[in-house]
Image (cartoon, rainbow over all chains, first blue to last red; front, side, top):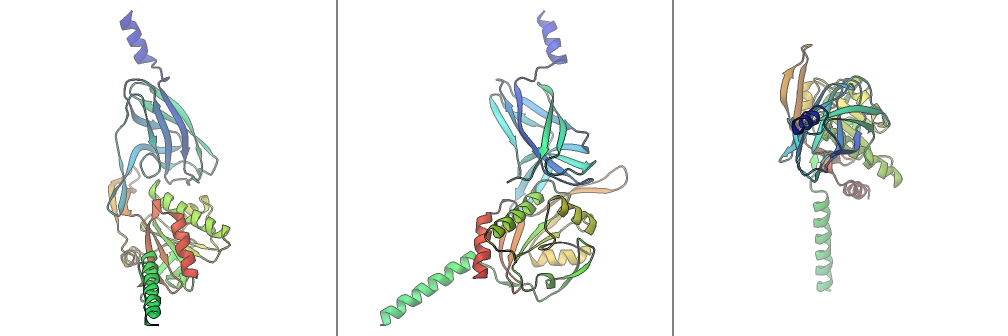
Length: 135
Length: 197
């Protein structure tokens, strides 16, 4: 019975423990890039890992981080984001973000875009992000 | 009497020092001209296009999804704050350090989607050598990173770059540099007002 439950958990994982809040992205134009930001809340006792993000909005979607070296700033791809148990992780301007490259259309202020977040434990979580200018 | 003169002199020195600290630079940018292209595809000369105007100048590339949009947005918010204070004669310039990809058309789209007002904004690109010479004048560095080629043979890369907004006075002198993505807008507005006084 326990084995059956374990198999069911792997096939149909519950995403109740991972909550995504405040998803937003910057307006940008076709063929260019934008950044997607959100907050991941992990309510479980166990850590979870975001390892992939997909969207039909763009040709490529990657997890990135912004870093600085003195006065210089740059971005680099990261493979995963680990969200420790009972904690939250914010993807925000100037830090970790989802880089959405080669947009298939313009994203104007107020437009919405769908993304699928892939977690090792929680599985797939679909989110909708709204394009907005930060205040 | 001598005491009074000494006190006045002391106050004058103090005021001078505090002004210098607020606007620590005084670099003349008018000694050399640079032939560039604006977002309309028109030939323009820097610094002629900012002549007689206090200018807020940012350094960006349009393929950047995070830092450069923050810098551009901070310039936009600065303009908004200045307008609230009924100051509408400040010039805003964004120079691309990625002239290979940032054509005038690309710059124009980048500006339009962010609702930048071309009456006061100019976005600049140009020949790679000229752009790099002008960047040197501002001590701005930009290096390609993670370079690869996509399926269609297009070069893809990110850029590591100086995070910079600069304030230039109406005489074409560079007066202060700020961290573009995290600039304190109140500080920039205060410095612009100090230049206007």
